[in-house]
Image 1 (cartoon, rainbow, N blue to C red):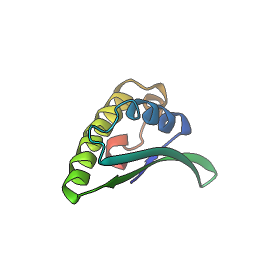
Image 2 (cartoon, helix red, strand yellow):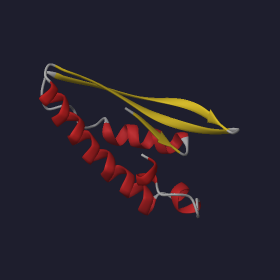
Image 3 (cartoon, helix red, strand yellow):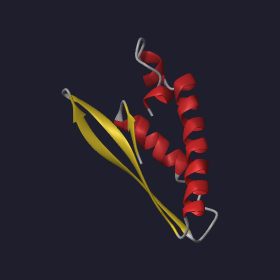
Length: 97
């Protein structure tokens, strides 16, 4: 999964918030990282998430759980983060992810 964020700080914050929850099953492995992209002269950041699982069902459950956590992180950022509040007129983070 590649999840774009408008700033590197927001991507780093999301990474820190999401990586504290380990996978519940030892049969599922998750790797989180950030990657900088340059778009029209501005730095944007992408949160990269890689999953490995022994079965499709375990993969689906793990990704669904991750997406719920990501949604919560994005909602908190959208409501409380200074960078997001200052970006008046931009589409919401939840719509861009």
